[in-house]
Amino acid sequence: MPANNKQKLKLLYLMRILQAETDPEQGLSMPKIIERLAEQGIAAERKSLYRDIAALRDVGIDIQTLPKRPVEYVLVRSELGFDDVMMLIDIVQSSRFITERKSNQLVKSLKSLVSDRERKQLGQRVHVEGRIKNKSESVFHSIDTIHAALQAKRKIQFLYFSYGTDLKRRPRHEGKRYVLTPVKVVYADNNYYLAAYDDEDQTIKTYRIDRMELLQVSEDPATRNATIANYDYEDFAHQSFGMFHGDPASVTLHVKAPLMDVIADRFGRSAEIMESTPEYADVRANVRVSPQFFGWLAGLNGGVTLKSPSPIVAQYNAWLKSLLPTEE
Image 1 (cartoon, rainbow, N blue to C red):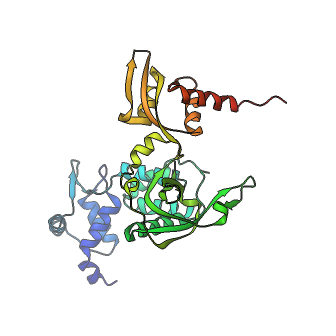
Image 2: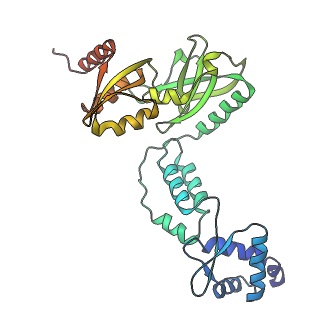
Image 3: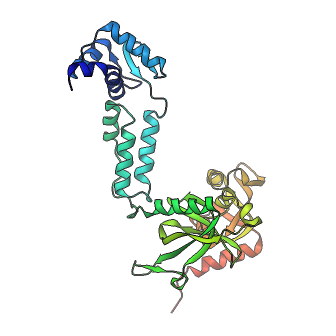
């Protein structure tokens, strides 16, 4: 590009230099800015650069100075800071539902939001390799289709698969398409799920979106009723374990003091303290009774035990006995 044309774009070059080379801890002095512009074939003087910086500030670009000698100029990024980008990269790289290719694309885009120096810091961070990654990006297209159905107030139809003992996908429902009313898309346990209403059973069930195929918006209008209108995922999330359904029940748990953090994380403010001492607490909580709930209890190694009601305690004991090997 001719030098006179570059001179006309001095503001843009100045902006690009500040964006690439400055951050809240490291800026560029005026001599360094002049040097960087000269490398681009742009001659600049201090007075003109002061005017340029003032012009950028006038249009809302946040350029600040660091109290150093000489004074350094910094472009402040108000959208996302270094810590924000670092956290988002960790989330992207640890998410199973994001494919390796999509993960690399997102990480590259996120790194473009920070300075060169900060980008090198991100590159030096240790990220866990070999995580299980979704092999297909179809989950994102499926989510778009579900949202389209929600907006159009129509049902969806799809084939649903599970894995056999040979680790091959096999269709459920005798290979027939499910035709359901979508209620809500949720993210839990590193997977996307669809909460959908089944007209035949008159209940809301959850389905792994990555296990759907041939998903499309149906011509049938979505079902509308009180069950769908009153569905509260937050309540369901506290009560269920691993997105598995079960009969709702109020149970009393006997909790040793060191395990109260687990109860707080699991049930939040919905947990009700019935009795407490410095050593233990009896906590009432609403759960969905299922093998996953029983497995959660067993995994706490006696730190949390099921106290009542008696029928569910008996069901839990029977479940535990069923895990023991049978004598031949």
